Image (cartoon, rainbow, N blue to C red; front, side, top):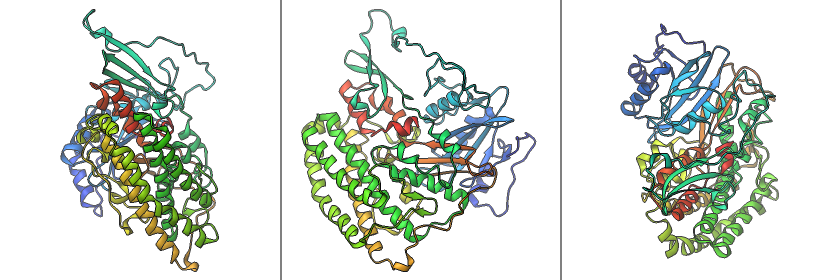
Length: 556
């Protein structure tokens, strides 16, 4: 888009939907211009109108889900994009585009309206250099506070030496307390504690045995995934990366997130047969992730290594064998391609389908064992019921999705609410629990394994009877993809941890100009202080484990 002019008036196309026309009227006093994206209408607003616009969209138009904040730099300006949806209908979307001056990139913070903007804006400040006025805690989030420069800014000097001193951690509460009035202690959980599910450092301030303050410290394995994707080509070089965002087994779901975004951008239609194969593979991948989540949770909360954890590894091995037969890999699958999948089911076909059915036949009995060992376990109940409480409105404000949100009674699942693949043709249920606690999140994952098995079984029935001459696994996609310049899209799928979104801006070449990853664990982890503060230190570990955080999609 061109640099906005305050004199511009939002364009109104007579063919626009009723929703878009209503948004035009609602934002008439704020909008400088329209900057529509492939997925949603976009409105350009002044940097000092951010809160007013977000408040209007949330209260008067029902856009209560801030999915993502994307920041980028152009030759003539900086830009923040707030990607908004509705929890009750994510197909209705709107983009709020906020340009900031090149010589003074300052924009109003959206944190007062959506708590999830806190971490997203901190990342934009850290990597791009945009400052957000009135942000409650504007400091770096991935890089050390002493880092010089902003790595994604155009004038960043990559050869500049960096000095990162080792400094003592400060107790964030101590300056606010009178001497002798408290018994506070700073406790470092991580960055190598096994309960953190990755290289996560949690700074915990204890008042006696009670958690008084929690500050997750991330960025230990930031690997510049977005920048590597920007250097790769749409057609061939980006797809291997998504598997690495979730080493728990949800890689095929991540591949689908990129595929869906790129296919929308390039207007690629996926053959129906390939959609069925994708759906089956994705749900096996979800089960692979959930088995690890529940098995590791038993280890976190009860130290149960010999029974539940090993049972989970046993079931994961069976799924990994099936996915290895299908994709050639046990974890970094690289099976999806733009327009479909790389190859059909392995031969002999009937033998492979029979192997999958044999596994599914054992799922009900195995799940009954998990319920006996976990949900019916008195120790697990004591440790998880009414701990880590996350009310539904708080979960929404933080942008929580997936089992974390559904465990708080938020009935939100993109497979049903923004259908893709073959999900809308199959019979399955969205699992929702309203306990809002650690136990509910565990129960959601166990029940979702059951629903995934139902989806896979129906896909097997379809694949078994599919005519051989109609088994098209991939659309006719050009070898080199060059989407139109300045086309922008944000698209998401229901990954193992929740909403995994991808923003792509094209520049007319065969590589993205901007590639932004919205990892569900990023927003879910941000809600940890809400769940843990005021509780005991063992409850903090149980709450952290209940998030099923994978740091690969947090740090990226």
